[in-house]
Amino acid sequence: MGACALVECPHCHREFVVSPSMLGLGVELHCPFCDSYFPEDRSPKIQKG
Image (tube, rainbow, N blue to C red; front, side, top):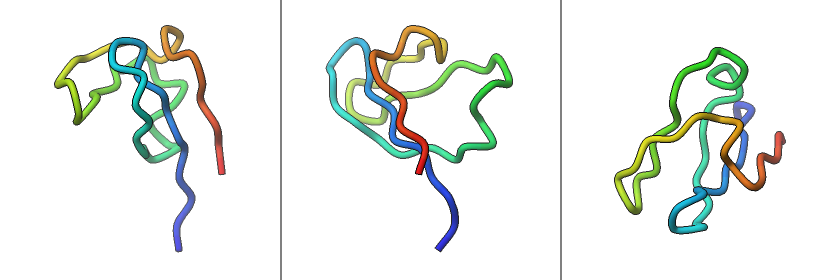
C-alpha cells in the first residue's frame, strides 16, 4: 500500500486522505465532504503515515 497523509478540514473538521507528495507544494487542499479549498497551513491537523 502506498503512503498517505490524513488531513483535517478547518471548515467541517472531518478528516480525509491525501497523497503526501501534495504537502509542502503550496497547493490548496480540497475537502471532499464540504467541497471547500484551503491552504495546508490552515488545517488543524495533518498526520503523515
